Image (cartoon, rainbow, N blue to C red; front, side, top):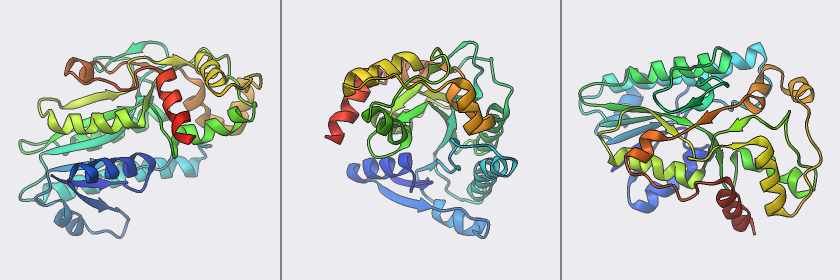
Length: 287
């Protein structure tokens, strides 16, 4: 297949490039800047089979007013320009996979794709607007899947690259009270799920890309200490996380308990359904 990836230089994008290249697919990288013309984008999309849109600035950080603008612009304007380019194609991709996030859900309920309990903060609004922009790509010729990612764990980057060093030094600990649920996914399963969605054209709309077994921050902390053989005594109180990250602290402190019902009902099998299995594999790969 001919697969166009926007955001290929990132942690997830580079893993997708490797997977599909190994499979024998033709990969085309898209970089969307303010100076990039819609015509140029449309030319690269023409007669492609799939477009995967991962573009977006890193959500982890302190959300100043300026950075909030960056988070919105990098997602919404990029996606709108890509949709405009798609509409110009005579033979557009049959599948559009768009990144999204479990941050759209509220912190008080369990969620699968049928959930109507959405958050009311900046992150939830950002994700909602991003999905709305992506769904405009849907037509009789193109189906759209918005993939609500959990926290992505894998060797070589992502959240684990920030988490492992303090734990390996014996400086790890829970955040806040530790009761917040974390919906996560191993990078390998995320990549396999993307390929699964491409192959299963009966699936469209919202799809949760999370492990079937979310875990509390406290249980995650204990698991990391156990697997690494390190103490986990250096807790980060909620007030300190909020002091460091401000409004952006909700990414670390708010509970998200999310389940991948659509993937499982369609027959997708996770290689790493539990946090222990994922963590053991990552630590093994690191040597």
